Length: 83
Image (tube, rainbow, N blue to C red; front, top):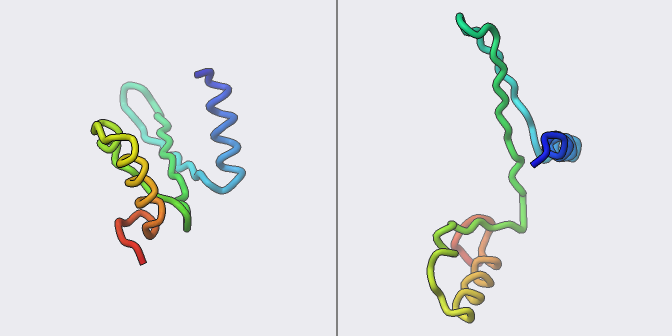
């Protein structure tokens, strides 16, 4: 990707409050001062779920995979629990 595109997206995410950037400056004897950025994404408070990438590597029949995705979608946020 173009570096300008990445910078633009980072700025949009920061402006929207979804991303925070923490910059740490360290001094190195050989290279001088080194800046390191850490990026933190704000987690969603509701209506989200995470899937392990292993889900997509398994060869579920289409109907079973669809059912599992729907089931995961109605679980409590990032859990496998249904009320």
